[in-house]
Amino acid sequence: MFQRKTLVTQLEDTKHWDVIIIGGGATGLGVALDCTTRGYKTLLLEQVDFAKGTSSRSTKLVHGGVRYLAQGNIDLVREALHERGLLLKNASHLVRNQSFIIPNYGWWDNFFYAVGLKIYDFLSGKLSFGKSMRIKKKEIISRLSTLETHNLKGGVVYYDGQFDDSRLAVNIAQSCIENGATVLNHFKVKNLQKDEKGLVNAVVAIDTETLKEYSLNAKVVVNATGVFTDDILKMDNTSAKERIRPSQGIHLVFDKSFLPGDDAIMIPKTNDDRVLFLVPWHNRVLVGTTDTLLDSHSLEPKPLDKEVDFIIETANRYLNKDVTKDDVLSIFAGLRPLAAPKDKSEKTKEISRSHKIIVSDSELITITGGKWTTYRRMAQDTVNKIIELNKLPNAQCKTQSLLIHGANGVVDRSSHLYIYGTDQKGIEKIKEEDPSFAARLHPRLEFTKAEVIWAVRHEMARTIEDVLARRVRILFLDAKAAIEIAPEVGELLRKELNQTHEWRAQQISEFIQIAEQYILK
Ligand SMILES: Cc1cc2nc3c(=O)[nH]c(=O)nc-3n(C[C@H](O)[C@H](O)[C@H](O)COP(=O)(O)OP(=O)(O)OC[C@H]3O[C@@H](n4cnc5c(N)ncnc54)[C@H](O)[C@@H]3O)c2cc1C
Image (cartoon, rainbow, N blue to C red; front, side, top):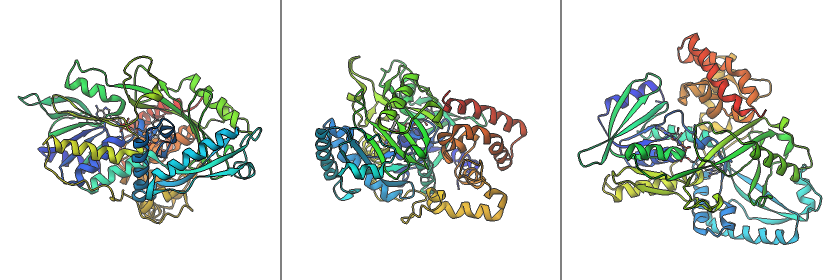
């Protein structure tokens, strides 16, 4: 079902699509799932891999956004809290309830945050994750053994969601296919085509593996390309104005010893008025993020020295264990597709984070902004808009209670494979059939060869990077280990994909080039 060959045949056999979606991040995959479950003939094309862009580089929070509440953006927070609740139900293998402690070093702060978080609780309605409460200094110290205690007055604990972003993307892609869509990675849209009335009715796309080009017709084309939005808008109209301004956020990953307990830390106001999170993730600690306006976008954005210094300095102010650059296991940057500011004085944190649907004169539909947490709602709004424009027949949205591939309700987290949900037994079976696949990939890592095999056979992974960055998150958890195991992973892929030794050598060199950027030098 998830074989590339089968999917390409579907693409070749279908003369007319109802919808073609460009971009396989959270937004595009959400739209594809919404479309196919409403019964439309749906095709999604992703130029590299699912979640290659921003959608694998988030802070891994399924949240309403405490920060947006402080800015008075009640509707945005209420909507996101509702979606947070749906995601926990629909993808319980990937989303979990996470406690966050806000340590307070001033009495007034304690009161302020306790009240604010009561509103946050209230806005989540029936889909609450747990009641926030003030906690005493003694309790904080027992729960956060590495927290700086000098001048600590007390704190507040509240609850939000925590998830694995690119694994959710892969599972949504699988759900799309299970519900009848054709979804392809490594397939780049190069151009748009129009009918005699000037309406977009086709895309020209290239299979980047075979270099074969296709012209594919559709009733409607959706541009869901994140920070690449303007590139597609320019294919539609060369003089289209710039809609997007990328804002970079970086994260550093550390060993679990920097935050050994189960609680995350939320620092609501850093020296330069930002929010910083320290979150347990896959047995490590993720610390971020920053908010730096950039003038250009790329698939592999580069963290800036000043962003690294800011995170290390802030972490050192709040932790009693020294954090240095040498402790960084992985560093990654992502780009928020923010609406271009009205003028240069507008600060990024003041620019709206809600999503935006743009209908071009050519009836190309663009969906941008928002966040991972609200991907489902963004899709629903987009498809409702397409129906309102009479481009597709009316049909009800079905994703509110649709289980995502792998969801099983009961989650047993005793093995790191819990993240696969119902697929966990498939991986166990691979190990039983060939015990050599039960071997660990690296002595520092819990992951086994069986997960690589599974990724190739069932999750549409095509390259070493697809596997190590977005199926098994090793590049994001321990970049040096990822480089060390690249030759072995390359060999597993070569055999599974029936490729040549030259292909493998090329793969290793391409992967190492990318992975080097995840090591802080
Ligand atoms: C630092 C940071 C932290 C964040 N943390 C959180 C968080 O904790 N929780 C949360 O809810 N949200 C968070 N977000 C927001 C969230 O990650 C984004 O809103 C979301 O991932 C955007 O998804 P997207 O699909 O719009 O864009 P992307 O994920 O960038 O996807 C766009 C895709 O389009 C593809 N594409 C581009 N051009 C073409 C083409 N010509 N042909 C085919 N494909 C093409 C790209 O390869 C890419 O994969 C964070 C964002 C950042 C930057």
